[in-house]
Amino acid sequence: MNIFAEFLPDFLQFDAVDGASLILLFGIILLLGSLGGKFFQKVKIPQVVGYIVIGILIGQSGFQVLSASVISMLNPISSIALAFIGFLIGGELKTSVLKKYGKQFTGILLFEAIVPFFTVSIIVTLISFLITKNIATSLAIGLVLGAISSATAPAATTDVLRENRTRGPLTSTVLGIVALDDAVALILYAVTASVASSLLGYTGGSISTQLLFLAYDVFASIGVGSLIGFLLSLVIKNIMVNEDRILTLSLGAILLSSGTCELLKLDTILAAMAMGFFMVNFATVKTRGIFSLVEKFTPPIYVLFFVLVGAKLNIWNITPYVALIALLYLFFRTAGKSIGARLGSIVTKAPITVKKYLPFCLLSQAGVAIGLS
Image 1 (spheres, rainbow, N blue to C red):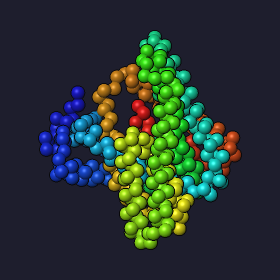
Image 2: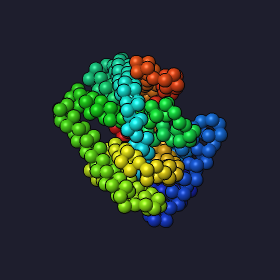
Image 3: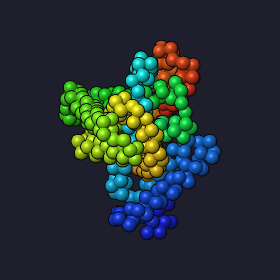
Image 4: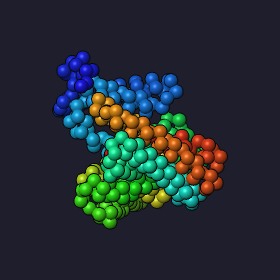
């Protein structure tokens, strides 16, 4: 039972929202989120942690300013945030960068995704079996958590990079990896979810069926983003001159991409990345300043996104078994990501800065991992 909610006046507990209360709610989230982010930044902790902590305090685990129904209603904000993030990541994927770092990206990506998958899957399965004595359930849990562990949070990662205004080979490598990491996580999840369903006696579809749905998700997402990005690039390249209009058109295209993916149940990040990729490579001169302008729109969107991520968490539902599995997951995912990133950097002969610091850049999780779970 949540005792904190009892201390909050009724008018500050949003069980449903209309026009006026929605404006008030956004004001509360942005104000508290910004203050929380600034406080954590002052004590040398990334501001994204502050946003999530504020979300926990005003969400299901804290004073319940946001009810579960309101959080669910605000889900489109997460989709919009991921679209902006994907668009900006796609803008970093210049063909010149891919030619220079492509093999390095691929090598590191495989190691940093596969190693945590095996470490988490094996340990969680073993410990869960020792507790439950049920091998099928334990293996199903281990495989699914292993697949989820391979994902990295593009939102949190890019926010920290933006906060510190980083540039160089390490930044290029991180952005390249998080751009592709979600696709690997989706593939692993599709396979393991099918295996887990079979182990638990469900008949939701064979592995081939799951892979077919996965292929549709990935390629259709990229197709939607590529089409919008290609058409947008043509318009900007041949018609648009005024930077303000280019910015407005770009923002409209990002929202169009996000909305289309929501309707078709596609991956918002992949679509937005494809759109950003087309814009930066096919309308290079005119879009050079657009990405920096779009980036200026993202701080309030980041605040809303991460506060809502924190608000969804409900620590009162955590049992001792779940807590133990969560701790094992956290420890062995961290170990797996660190070892995998290090091995990948060594094998691909990455620069010393990448070898030294990359493992610390791939530990955050949100977005895709929460969606898969």
